[in-house]
Length: 187
Image (cartoon, rainbow, N blue to C red; front, side, top):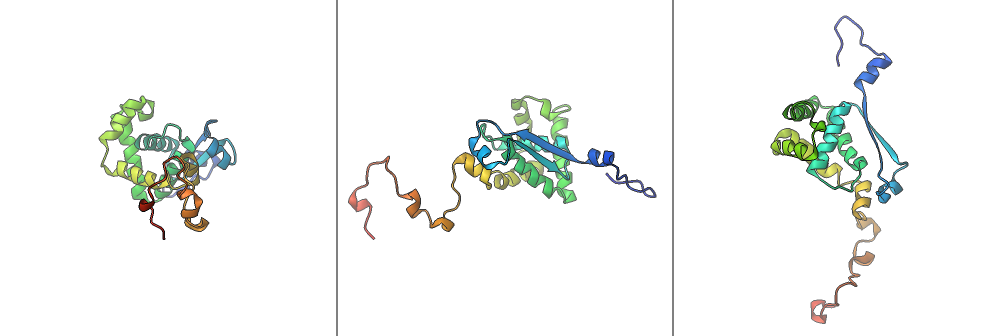
């Protein structure tokens, strides 16, 4: 990505396109909660540090680590976005590049071309290794702490700003028999 000393860097459109990447997809028709939050059915994630192959590999790897079959790729792309931002640090970029290359090498060429079971088996070999742990640690926050995931899982978010849980349905257990009086002392 550097240039030869003594020559100006290549700032042409072709060089820009060669060094930029994007992930894109379409929201599933069955993900109504996501469609309600999204501005449109399509999504695109511009990558600044990672190439498209690395981005797609990280997205699929995250799907294997945290499998939710009905959760849309758009939510998993948020993990890739955060990994791409972290890759601004050259040590993280090198770690992610080496991890993707390691998966491809273990697959005999292209990890993405393998079937899901083979991908998972090779990914499990890296469990506990720095690449796997970086993806897992980033995903646990990026994947579950966003409005799209909240909508998918039915989580209404924190309740403090809305007056707490007590008067917002926390105590409306109408599907269980009422407890004995001594089980619920008056305050």
